[in-house]
Each structure stands twice: as C-alpha cells, then as structure tokens.
Image 1 (cartoon, one colour):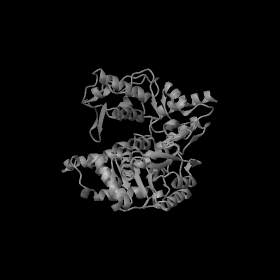
Image 2: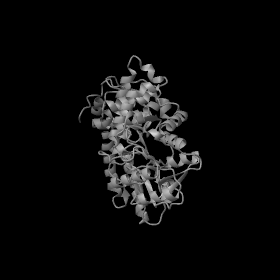
Image 3: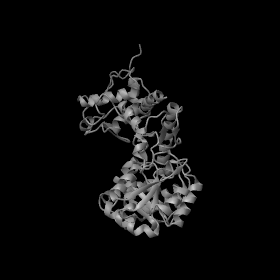
Image 4: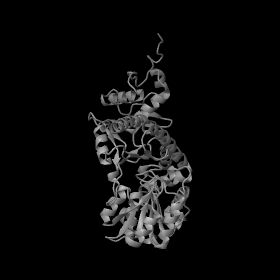
Length: 462
C-alpha cells in the first residue's frame, strides 16, 4: 500500500473525511466547521498550505480551494496573500450563524444577486487604500469638492453603459433605491401619477406607496412598453413621467428595442414627461444598447447603480440628472441620505479608473453564463425567458397554476422563487410566471439542486 509521506509531518490540521460524500469540498468544509466548534482548531491557528493539504488528502487543489472559500465566506477563515490562511478570531461566534439547522433548507432563487465569487479586485483595492498614510480620511465626512475626480470615474462607467454625459450632471446616491426615492420625492407631489410597466420592480412600488405617488400600468407589447400606450397615458392618464428598466427588465428579463427607445424618448420630449431610467443591469451586457437617456438627455434621470454589475455592498449609484432637475434631486438626496460613504465612493472610483471594474464585470459575466447553461439544461423544455448574461429568468408556468401558487409550492419543497404577483401593477392581470434568480444560490451545486426541484414540480404540472 502507498505510504502517506505526511503522516509524521507537523501539520496544524489533519482532517479525516469520507470521500464517498459528494461534493467532497462541502464535506471538507463541514469537517472544518466541526473542528472549530469542537475546539480542535483554535482561533488564530494557521492552516496548512492548500497544496500541502491536497497532497495529504490525495485531492485536487481546486477541491481544497473551494472548501476554504466556503469557510472564508462564512467568516470561519481569514486569508491574506503572503501570510496564509488562519482560523478567524471571531470564528466561534460566526459558526453559530451558519446554515439554518431546520430539516428543510430553503435554496435562495428569489433575490437578484450577482455571483459572490468575483470580488477580488475590490479586496485588493481596499487593502491598498487602508495601507496609505492618511487612511483615516476614508472614515470622516466627505466634501463635495473632494469628489470631482470620482465624478470622472462615474462618467467612465456610465459611458460604458451606453450614455455620454458630463460631470456637471452627476450626483451620488446610496444605491439605486435611494436614487429612485429621491427622484420621486423631488419631482412628484402626493397624489401625482407616474407610468410603469404592467410588471415592475417592487422597490419602485414601495417607494411610490411611501410617498403617496400613484403608479399607472402602461400596456406592453412583446414585454416592451408600448409607445402608443405611453402616448395615450400622456394624453389621458395625467401622468408626470415614467419609470423604465430597458435592459434585462425586472422581472421579465426582456430588452427594449432601440427603435422603441427612440420613440419613448420622442414622446417624453413632446409631452414634457420625465423618465427614470434604471440602468442597474446595463453593464451585464457585453455591448450595451444605447440608453434612452442618449435620445432625450434633458428628460431622463439615468441611474447607474452598482449592486448588480459590481457588488451590492458598495451601496453606491451614480445618477446623471438633467439640468432642470439637478437642484431638487440634489436636495432630496442630501435629505434622504446626508452623504455617501467616502470609503466606498473612493473604493469604487479607484476600481473604475484602474480598469479593474472591467475584470470584475467580465468575471461576473463568465459565472452568469455558466449558470445559465445549467438553467437551460434543466428548464430547456419550458418557456424560460432571458439571455445567458442575465442574472435572473422569467419562467412561464404550464397548466393553470398561478405564480403565487407555484411560489408557495416551491418553498414547501425547499426553493424560494418570486411570483409574478409580487411585481404586478394596479389591476393588470399577473402572468402565470415566476422570476428565478440564477446567481443567488451560493454554488453551482446548490443552483443545480434547486433546478432539479423546480423541474420536478414543473413536470407534475404538465
């Protein structure tokens, strides 16, 4: 029998795992968790190098890396380049906050999240910032005059999204939701009406309800807002503006054609309507279509939030605002959030100016394409709208089951999806559909588990 040359080697951790448990990296991560909980590995312990551990266990290096990554994301481990991997000092407190111990685990496929494994450029940039001699300035109040070069970064990112603008139009917000709230608060009075798609972003619905702004559904054709219906609403519905997501529409995953963008822009100019263009998903596309704002820059408030294309934790959105709206929206943003975080604003700007954001976006895109290939493999027999670079899909249900009924049924089987009823506006009839978030599951394996359950449920409906 072969002799393990590491038997007498002074390794800090010598796990023993059952290799019949699949996937092996999860079994290894589980063993690491147990050893920390049971005091086998104390906080501060340096773990063996990954290659060394792979040799010891006769496993692929990638298996060890994935197990370490799982534990690092859960706060059990702390890794730094050149120093190695250590058991976190707060590992014991984190360990009790891991997966729910209930028998039925709910796989998250409802929330629209980018994959969580592509953040390394942000980590490198953040470490560099905190090593600077005057690092303390990132923890104070930011001043408007200090953000001028950051606005140049905003211009670069918005340009990448399909819209050319200038620094004098740029405002900062604490994320897209904050920007939407400030826009409605500044441009609408209680009782005012704005037009939206028949299914729309729930965050817009909650903000409108809070501000007592009524949202009016405007009919769609082939999942695009109908220009004719928009013009009819301008004449007959007493609306002041509209809210749109032209790329990767949430929730239907559709795209507005360039022709319709031009027509919508022309109607907005004709009737002096404002447009809130939510560009949250524009950067997911390798070659973004021109923004509606590019056809009506004096009518469109363009919101480039970073939660879906870079990272939700940045809590930052760049808002390109027409001159006529800049002062009221600027005041509303100030009153709603005081200021954005200087640390996160600087981190984001450096990531953009250094072009590291391109690497980050490309990494997200690669992961998303890989995940959508798995979705197509399992749901290919059903109508699952969306493209391979989108982080969610719109699944049309066979038979007569409603989206709400399917959401409840899926949750009972351990998968969270969001029904059309969550997105529908006014008296519009919700589609028999659910939104399936492709990148929300932590791993490809978890995504596959969720899809197996969904496919089984769908098969039962046919």
